[in-house]
Image 1 (cartoon, chains in turn brown, purple):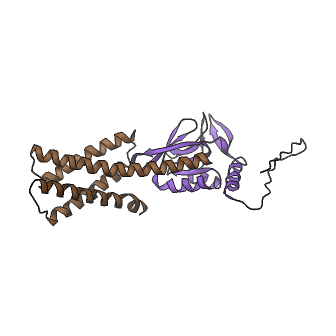
Image 2 (cartoon, rainbow over the protein chains, first blue to last red):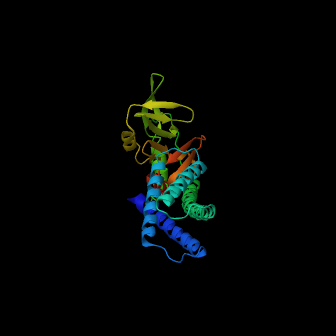
Length: 133
Length: 145
């Protein structure tokens, strides 16, 4: 429960908000001013699946943070392409794949950056406690 | 703080007495630190049984159902489970940092962010351990004591 409130709920909210913002901007640029409610629900479901993948990856002992970052990036990116194809989220042309990939990468980096920063603050707090003891 | 050591060959047992107006956090920490010198754990290595002083233990770990105690440069096995050991070392600088590991924070050098909201601990002997996210708050509380 604690993990859900501290990690998965904030990450879902951040990812959902940033993804909606990113795709809304892309749609406006491409001349599609409307988004369907069904798509928004699908996006939410997709993010929940990503959270489950993240939880699953937590059981693997990665050598470094970079390895974990890259592995999760590849897994979730492939999943996003499959979901995009299956849910007809975007046309599979070079330009739309590139623009969707850019949005995906920005959102992914923002979420990871946020949690990495939080972990660094926590680590610094513990290190100062160690130094003061 | 005044420190007095009375050395006398007639004293049969070493005794530490702290006279204070009240026990604050620093004194509590000192108390916990001294406490680890007061008892040892029975463990085995190469068929011999040893009494290992608590302050020499860097960490204790369970691997494949067996418990191991790690010092600066030696590994000992222990017949007791990690849960039993955890109960024994309560109110000492040893604290659980994951389901399979108990760390002596006296030997903790620093921590760094690690995969999936966990922390990587570096010990004074250069070894690294993973602190599970569920135990981070307990570690902070232990260090604040």
